[in-house]
Image (tube, rainbow, N blue to C red; front, side, top):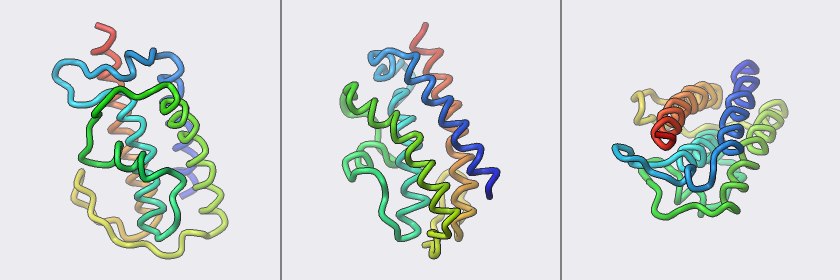
Length: 154
């Protein structure tokens, strides 16, 4: 499992770089043919990681209920995101993974409530399976973000 937890900070660096190099306007833009935007996808990976790792383990999450409500599965952008919220998401990209790695090393994840993911239909029954799915999930959204970047630049 250490490999997965070592890869996640690297994928998060890629998302961070996109935030740093993309205007607030472009982060919020929903191109024709899309139902969300770049910043929604990045907020979504942060929220999903917290839900799958912490909430399903019965542990407190590092994110607010407000973020969960805006970026969980089956949501879409309802309004433009402020620079303040972008900065919060940008910070959470790393703080959430750093804490997760520390918590995993300290054997904090004891229990896990099984959850069937809609993307693949697989049931996660253990924190290790959750981490593997989180990595896969972030790869899916990396692809969406790359497509959105191309669309907003054209």
